[in-house]
Length: 442
Image (tube, rainbow, N blue to C red):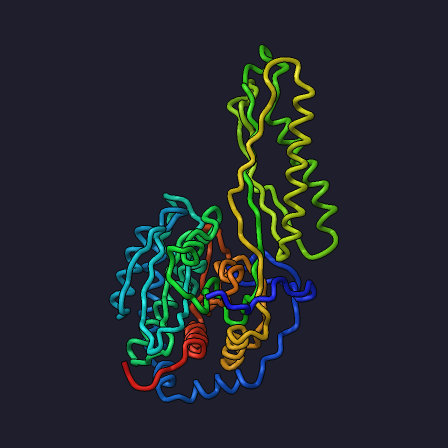
């Protein structure tokens, strides 16, 4: 399982910007990476295989059903930490598709296994079940021309539909693979989910010996993420006794401390991020207080910091901690009466950074499959489920699901199912190259 394919961080010169919805947090454009001829030849040979030719036709034939699967799944809410209903439906679809076995694990991941001829290798193809939208969000799909609109339709419900389509294609054509393949719908990819689904897959309670990991997230055809953007996320809460704005004047004020902490952190982090490997920071949510004439009893914020360099994330983290302690000390020095202000610093998100060299077979195969289907591939950095296998030394890539989409994490999220079959064909080529085609029919 722990193969030494990773080389840690890649050179800063490779940092680039992702345009697909799954990878909205990144940097500047880079030149396409050369693809080794042997992998281009591997794709050509696969595409000439009679069974693969039949599979490409089956993918085309399945397009109307896949379109309907996308709508069905999108209209089942999957808010953070509440993916169960969508998960049950996805399990039902995987069983109907013909998987050898389907089950839901302890955290809610839906797994389906398709046995390989050679059980020594296991390849995962995965998309995530969850969306960022809270309970009560209207997820009805609306169509205007060829554009579908609904929260979560592109990120990542389209990925779920495509993974299902790949499984259906293998079953309908009878193509067997040498490696065992796990088709998975994971929980907890978004936000405070903190990749809990894929973290469980790579824990002692997950499947054994995952050798390769193919995540499907976002749309489009040209991108291959071979690097993971690491992040720390904190919820910081200043706590005091609270009281009347006039009658208790002189008590510590949590809002005052929060304001100072944000200021000190932003000033220092601005300087820190102007040089070196790209790093970002953001105070995304703040709250607290009860009324205009009440000293608040608490004031809180949620902070995000990111980089593909673990050292850079750690540097931002250090600046945040220092800013919080400075603000705490100053507010306590200013008080005129009452107890000291206290602060609770809670880590609510920890995504490890990491990466895979573009010369590793899985990355090369993803690039070669993309180019074979007529799109020039580009390597990317992203914050996706692949972060976890990267950190474990397991080869991984994240690819888009075809078509085009936008407005990720917005109520007007949209998807255009144009030439979506190409996304599924790319995924199939990549999977078959990585898992190997066994001789004979299933």
